[in-house]
Length: 408
Figure 1 (cartoon, one colour):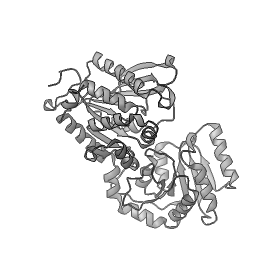
Figure 2 (cartoon, helix red, strand yellow):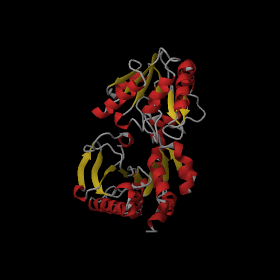
Figure 3 (cartoon, one colour):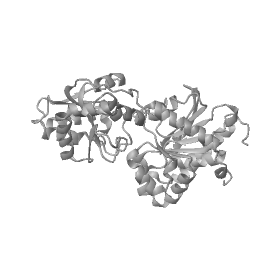
Figure 4 (tube, helix red, strand yellow):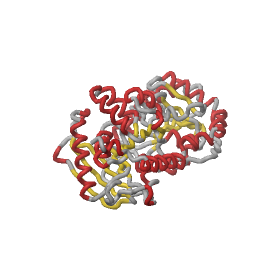
């Protein structure tokens, strides 16, 4: 039996298991923008469990290393840890050993014994999470985010045996990026029976989608700090190709960014002679954006290397068809559903054809979204996601990985 330390929850006691989250993508009080709040949304829905969050921020100057304990913060114990690590993953193992050692010392000093350690990336902090889980005999959960995992698997072949070991030891692997599931399995040899999808949580999920009549607008919401990653240059070029065929339709780019980014977007619009046809709108509050999406013809975001992209399901639950990228973003969550058009990344011809299809067949797409309401809700609704996550937490604690702990 485990030590009766603070935070240790035996299943028979009726107390909730303690979950330690380790994440480099956590929207904490001192993290500079832009950063997604995807991990926060998951943690927020588990506050009936004792939770500790270690929000990691990599710094390249050792003098900036910092450990800040915010105490009880919005229903969780929050730590922000700025740790030293060189760029490009140089010395990744040594740096993550140091991260694991610092976290373990904190847990021991505070007499917190986690039952679950959830690393919100498989590589990088996945190494630290694996070490901490072994130190405390906790079950290891890892989230797989395709963009970073694919880069590391390709660039660091010497780490692959280690990653296979982590995948073997993990109690659960969560694919945030469904599009990289087969690649992850190929590199790690993970048992597919202990994997599941973990879509990012959106706020407008509903079991019955009722599309509304659209205005002649195609919308592209994004951070203008990342217009190349979001595929905006190709989207504008593609819209220019079909401007005459879509003569009554405007393209609306919504987002905020620094002045140089705004100037570049305006230059792209002018270069294609699209003044008055491509509209640049400033940042829109999230609730206003969700309401705005429903009245548009389509949401178009041909991103490169998008881990998930919450705006895709937000648009679908608003009743609006989407243009998305194959092998990126939401690809893999829409199998068997004809509710949008997938395009090859960077392919302007694909994007142009998709824009025409989404506009000319818009009524049919909206009808198919309505018909697919139940399936979309089952795959992407927060209630379904959290129910599966809670069940996995309970199961992992019932089958505590004593074999892993004893192999330290």
